[in-house]
Image (cartoon, rainbow, N blue to C red; front, side, top):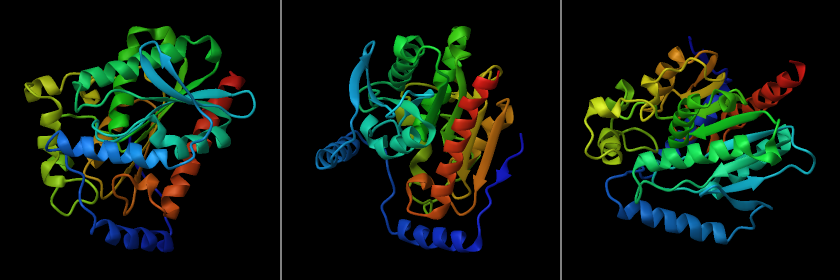
Length: 309
């Protein structure tokens, strides 16, 4: 599957370049110990207490906490959201703004997974949390008959792809999933070429430390073991997975992860976004806003297609 260059006007590219200059002054996100992620997580939770959150329900999906946002009317579908944060920070609430955008634009319910973090839990435990939440959603009476879309960003993209691969054990459940939206995910835990070549000028992420961070995430494993699916989704059998919409930026060291997995993912629609760094859908730039609008339109289209079948 060949990628498509995301169309961006010169003013939009100039806006992105100006924002990138600001990013260049910011510290890079590093995962080299367990103390820093805990500090960042504490600051995140403290900042969330200062905000007025939207009306949401927190409940257990079997043993895993999930945060549910619902539309004002009857939902036409349901989105399983898996947040990013390098596997070591973040929670379901951090995606509220993006998820409310999906709720309102697509008339869907959004179930966001509050999976455990890798500061205390092996990454396989995080994968199990996401699979548990997915199976709960796909069996929940409340969402019976509704088409399901899986959305994942960064580390959440990895967990989303791993969840879909694991769901192949339950073909009837996997058939309920009508699509996946994956933003700049991590699909090879040994590091794709663009990860291994990442330098100190990488924006937002710590380029030189990325391979080491992946090794810290999977202690005691050899690279051969790290390449096993679903731990590294790039090496899994992707046949039978639902169509996927994928985005990654040209300046993202994880660029090859998306481009390589898209070549093997049947029905992948992959877009390479010019001048975009990791995390660009959160930036106050027009390109990021248009990508989100396209994603929501794609989700609506996948849901509406079911009613025509």
